[in-house]
Length: 364
Image (cartoon, rainbow, N blue to C red; front, side):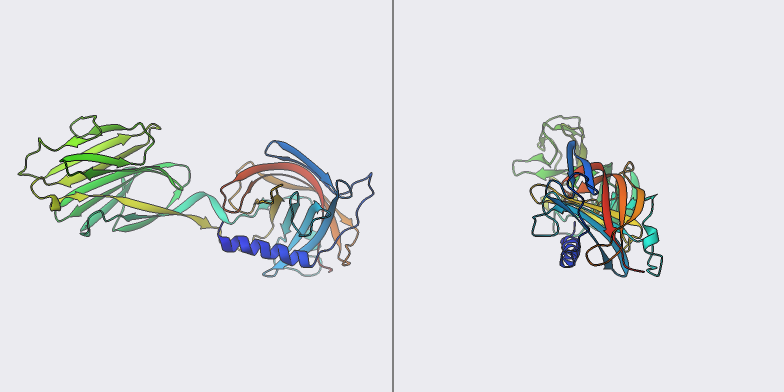
């Protein structure tokens, strides 16, 4: 997650904390608000008025859109969201905040999850790496054998978790070279590049998983190629195909002139993958679930687009007592399945469960 997005999330939480309101707690033997959850295979349950938990109901405005908020949290924590807290935020279905419009949106229905970044695709910038100082005169790019562009830089939107054979062909002062990398987005795959050594051999630099299998253009399987048998009067195109222990394939081809090593050319490229930002700023009618684990890490549903089997259902919606600020509230019975992500998306965990929450909304 972009650090500015994360800071914005904390800003919203702090705003809510400054305007904390409570709904009345139930009797010890009759919890009204509770959650029964399965977090990554571990059952968790807590209830307001029991287990030292309390229920906060509030709402907040963002760019004119109202979000109805409920938080089940330990009663003795000094911040709005502390370890063991569950927060659910429901965005109003429209920007119409007129009389009757806001409260009526809190009703039994299915809701989609808000998300900041597209789950399925990334924007990728491929750029040539100048191995030798001379700039290549021409560059051609291919993906899975199909020509897709030319120039020293191209940009493509590709699917995540798919293998692509990305190739580049370059020409420099009549010298042709080529490279093919297997790219698995956002940052996987394998690449290889031929290296010219001082002892008149060619070796291969590869980031593949060893052991590596080499297949040179003359059918040699050695890890190095010996130049001693090449004629010194002509240019040669020398290529190798490398397969790593996981079956990842890459290729490298150089134009090599034994009589003039300054006339050699080697193709190489790099790439940078960027998450695609969801441009739906208002996220009308969308839901966000946050859970803070025992170590204080915030996990949120509002990061990547949710898997297809995720769901969120409001089963019942009932008028409830006004909160401490005199604002009307709704008691909502909800069931859900979602994937929660850590700050940078490097950790994820599945959350499933049912809960009865209260949320507040403005007086009409």
